[in-house]
Each structure stands twice: as structure tokens, then as C-alpha cells.
Amino acid sequence: MHLPTPEAVPDTPEQRRADKRRWLRAFNTSLAFVLVLLAVFSAQGHFDVAAWTVQPWSVEGLRGILAAPLLHGSFEHVAANAIALLMLGTLAGGLYPKATIRALPLLWIGSGLGAWLLGDPGTRHLGASGITHGLMFLVFVLGLLRRDRASIAAAMLAFMFYGGMLLTILPREPGVSWQAHLGGAIAGVLAAYLLRRTDPLPPRKRYSWEDEEDATIAPLPDELEPPPPREVPVLWNRPERDNGVVLRFPPRREP
Image (cartoon, rainbow, N blue to C red; front, side):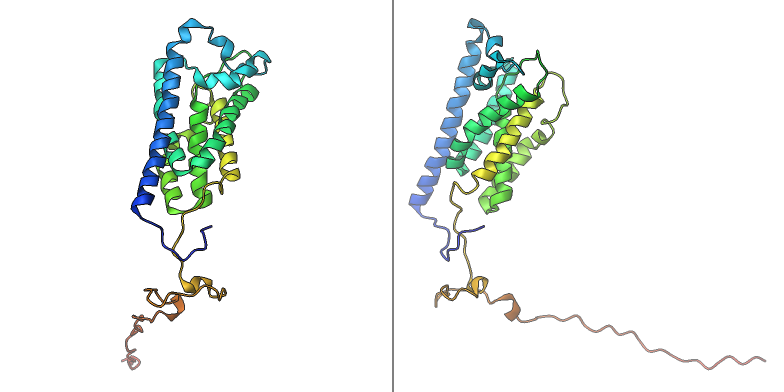
């Protein structure tokens, strides 16, 4: 699943500046969303929060699918989600800018639908934790599907910091909306599969013996290229084991 190009990965000052701008843009976007969450949390005392939460199997609760991720029950709640959004949003947006933008609506709606469909009637669900779970599963599954170095490294980072989200998609703690977590996780896996080719894969160095059947690909004359595996000389052979000499003794004579 790599681009069939013999060129090495470009490492020019222009490329470094473009990469820096892309990561800075992802960080600033994630930070702006976190600031929106804090602003909404500070204004929650001036309107009826319960009316904008996800209420399972309630027609009135459907509007919570759009509004509930902006609402939080406590400062600890919004702080935990803000840190996760800042880290996972920067990681996903910096490495997969196109896929992340297209996946966000799916993660947003998926987390709300998970709470609305799987939640108990009469309960209320709010918070952006469903989106954070969707981002973690998006980055993790994209690493499994794309399998280039950057994607694998991002998947390992996401799992190292938020691998516990694999457990929080199941009912464990009272008062925690595992339904929204599960909906966001399913949306993240689905978005990763659908958008795995949205962002181009980085070019990879290829050798001529990898494409022996393709006569159009030939090595450059001055290129330092290792030989095919079958042409590598054997530098060491296992020595034959010396089992020793069997000494035959004459049969013992009875006196």
C-alpha cells in the first residue's frame, strides 16, 4: 500500500515549512474548538442545558445529537475532553488533514446516534467524549490500514495515551455514557475505512528487484542498491557436528 515511486521522500526547506504549517493549523483548529467548549460551559447557567442533551428514543432529544457535544456536566468533565481533543485533534488533523475534516461530521453524528439508540429512555447524555473516542479510533485504524511509518507512529501514540478507550466503549462506570463512546468509536472505524486513501501516502524508496516483472523500472547507474536476496553471498555455514567416535569394547567374559 505504498506509492510506486523510485524517488526518495522529499526533505527540502519548503517541505519542512509546509509540514510545520499543517501541524500548526491542526493545533490551532483543535485549540479553537476547545475554547468554544469552554465558552459554552461558562454560559450553561443562562439556558436550560437539559433541553439540549441527547434523550434516547425521544423526538425532542434528537436535537441533542447536534448540541450535546458542546455541553458538559462539570469543569472536570470539560477539562478531560478538552485535553483529549487537543491532543487527538492535533494528531489526526496534522497527519490526515483531509480525512479528519471529512470524518468530523460522521464522528459527531455517530456519537449522538449511539447515545440516542442505545441509551435508556429517560436518561440524558452530553459531552464531547464520543468525538474523542471517534478520533482515537480513526487514528488507530488508519495506522492499521495505511501502514506507512507516520501512520503507524501516530497509531502507537494514540494508543499509548488513550488506549483505555478500548474499554470505555463498554458499560463500566455508572453515569458515563458508554453509548456515546461506542457510537463515536464505530463512526471512527467506519470513517477510517472510507477515508483511508483521502490523504496521499508518502513516497517510499523502491529497489529494482522489488519489481522485476516490470521492465519499465530500472535502477539508476550511480545508485547504491543492494542486490536481490537470492544473490546475497552466504558468509557463514553451520559447521557439521562431530558426533565423536564409538569405541567398541570386547564382551565381558564370565570367570
